[in-house]
Length: 433
Image 1 (cartoon, rainbow, N blue to C red):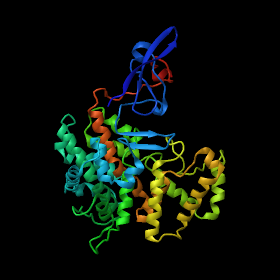
Image 2: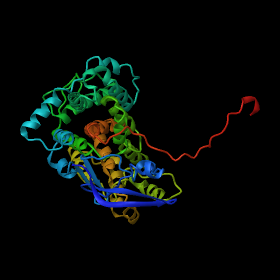
Image 3: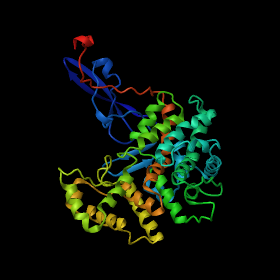
């Protein structure tokens, strides 16, 4: 389904010129003014830092309505998918556009499961990193290097190679993330197991050791699966746009996903849940909350409450409700009730939902506020929060990349600029300066 051009036109008048621009209507969301011919007809560009008012592509994958607090994967509400589906089924949905029937699901799940192992020589690649390397640094390097190990799925013009690359990426990312974690803590790598589901397999690769059996708690695996689902895609965010921009040059899929991981590493993007948990630890105890809340309300104080509000969602984050339910379940299961960080989180949550300042500013707890709490309770260090985010988002990146490759309107990304530097000037010999 493509965006439909309407009979409506936008007229732009300036300096004696009149330019008519087509208006296009999407399936959902605001109309879009098509400015592709603006430069040719009007000899002007638009200025939009951060591209927050610019549609960079057509897409059928994910839709966000920030005012309604709505997130849809291929039209399906995120709360329904997180509550009734599972991550592998969501992966199929994002990649192919429809929910699978039983046979399709079993075949897809089989393919993913049988591709979870990585090339054995990649073990040596990992050992080239310092032991104290951040897991995200390791993942950027390893994923980018996958094109050196899997030559038969790097031709972006071959549909079958694109399909193989997609399956490999979704299947192997948990293994790579778990290996990055094991390497960082000095423990031996754990091979994937074909008898485990996707989330259970990841937990086993992260926490099992050769010395003793590891019991996978089904409730924890389910919570992990929900985290994967809730982070699977999120429209044209910074990392997704990075993947598309890299892909627009014809770069191989592994290089594109590595670029997305690098972008996700930023604390304003994928590092938000780590920042939220570190903020809770900075506050320390419940009795100090009033002090920090007061600082957050002070415009002259640099302190900011992390994990509250969202750039896109104006009223509430639809993922947060599901994540909060998972947080309660995990903490109850593990018997974590007296943890001081958790007490701070609970009290901050209460204040955010009742305090007029928070309500007026729409500073509600978002998905990052709860996900960090869950991951810490499971035993993950904060350095692993963003790698898990990258693992979750890989299928969304791949789906967006595949869609971009098949879009006939897609061109190599080349943003314009508002140049404010020096005008043309002549070179002066160094002796005369």
